[in-house]
Image (cartoon, rainbow, N blue to C red; front, top):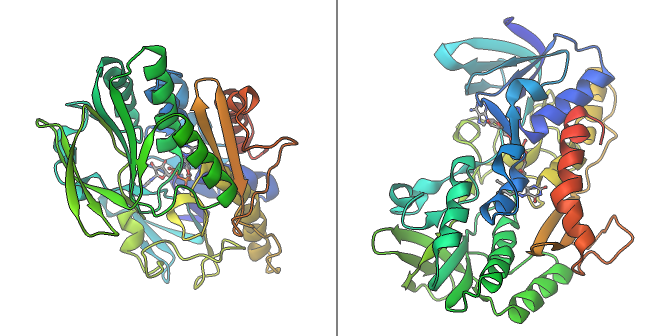
Length: 395
Ligand SMILES: Cc1cc2nc3c(=O)[nH]c(=O)nc-3n(C[C@H](O)[C@H](O)[C@H](O)COP(=O)(O)OP(=O)(O)OC[C@H]3O[C@@H](n4cnc5c(N)ncnc54)[C@H](O)[C@@H]3O)c2cc1C
């Protein structure tokens, strides 16, 4: 590894790899582009809710990191421990310092399990699980198969999260599972810290209709604050009433609160809420012209999804190349994102919208209508597009 690179990309996830692939196609960056990611594997995370419901295999969801790194890029499997934008230096493990001309920050989002009292001690036991970590998704399905009665609670925090509709995917497929296995004693419920079911009215209405039709109860403004695994009770704080109540459960599926990675929060690159502060249209950092950001770690005001990253990557690559050439940044990201929701095994809807929170559906069908086709798109077509298109800078 050299001590200086023309471009350094922090994070080899969805955003980092797709931008690297596009930059290498657009400009002469062979061996001048460094990707930093400490993870051994690159994961297609959207598969995990289906794995947790027994509808997919988790082994299909990841590849060794080196296998997704585009030709011409250098990968270093180390942790970023510091970013000094004025000096154009990043610090890696063992205090190793590397300098850059241009920096792309694609470090994803941090999952704050420790913000819920008692959760880390019981995760993976007592039928408490999460689909947000590769190592626990099998336990979700194991618990689902074992539970026969009582409250099955799916939670959602009020912080921004990645894969914004992952809890709903689990909720609906769990319901189908219980129906197929005649588990009529189970009371399935969603407890969400948000004040609404969905930010776009058309899909909010659809979700409400489906929850009512399927007899799934839901409570909004309810934040999971404590889990007692051995007693199988969960405490929720209600933002509206200020009341804290305890609910017994036989299974608890947790989506933890999330925030920007600490390394970003500790830098000078953030907005007031701690997210990487970028221009919502050009993806350029608001104070440093040689820094760009993509994906879950940014303050882009849209739902944090791989589908959003897919639309951001070409914009970032084009604008970064323009910046290198001293030209105006012309490419614009309009907030487009997509949220596929399995409404049962074999059926799905797909919300698609931009910054204006108005539906912008890309297929010639009503995407709020449940269909086999949209499930096929979610389960089969999007993963294929991801591995073969997006990560290779093609789609
Ligand atoms: C359960 C679940 C369901 C989802 N469902 C969907 C869906 O249906 N549709 C959809 O479009 N999206 C979905 N998503 C969201 C999607 O996976 C993310 O939005 C997308 O991966 C974001 O890309 P990113 O590059 O910002 O972050 P990531 O892909 O998470 O990549 C961040 C990378 O940064 C690395 N990193 C972090 N910190 C450091 C550090 N200090 N040093 C070095 N490397 C570091 C990490 O190892 C990681 O490889 C889902 C996610 C989950 C977890």
